[in-house]
Image (cartoon, rainbow, N blue to C red):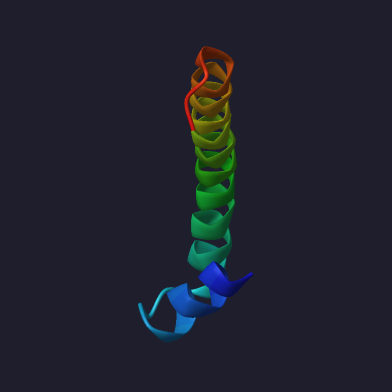
Length: 53
């Protein structure tokens, strides 16, 4: 939602372009965020199992 509004107001895109941009960003950022969080979680769990901080 915020991305769509910014795309229209700041970038001068049409509302249709803003919706497409927001959808693409949603499809990209959610899996990337999940993957990064999973990576960090696994690293911390391994460190914890070894007796680290």
